[in-house]
Amino acid sequence: MTALARLAGRAVPWIRGSSTAAAAAPRGVGLFPQRRTAFQGARMENGGGRGALIVLEGLDRSGKTSQCARLLSFLQGKGCLAEAWRFPDRETSVGKMISAYLANESQLDDRTIHLLFSANRWEKRNLMESKLLGGTTLVVDRYSYSGLAFSAAKGLEIEWCKAPEVGLLAPDLVIYLDVQPEFLCTVVVMVTMGPLSNQITICK
Image (cartoon, rainbow, N blue to C red; front, side, top):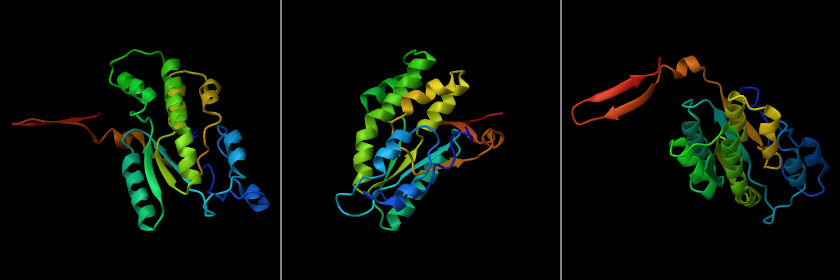
């Protein structure tokens, strides 16, 4: 996953006809070249700068949600218009299918669930584009990189996994929380609260 989730580049203004913006446009990680090129010349309706797409990736329980919240609070404290997003979005039609799968309420093969996770990102693409072009910065908990890592770990061919992601919006910055699995295995993974006792299970 470290190889997949690395710095994608810094945010640059999308100003039509700007050779400086074109020259400074960040390079992605091989997933989104079509969308980045298309967005490079977009003009903001309000005349200001666009929002940035910031993605946080990392292992489960590495602190992504906490760091997303802290970054969001920092940006809003600086007067930036910003929102927190996360994938999968379980409130969409596809997201509800994913939620059922994750809750072991349905059985799907690895390729089907990979495509559903990708479709979940596509469901939100138009709204994401609208928010960014309207000047809202999006702080996203997981994006395409997690989908690739999980599916590739199951044995699916990496190029096949990347194919449905091409055309999604390219992040301006990907932050990978590099926490060693050995450390994560020392944290509490389940707490069951009861009226008479607390049960704590530690991953070993």
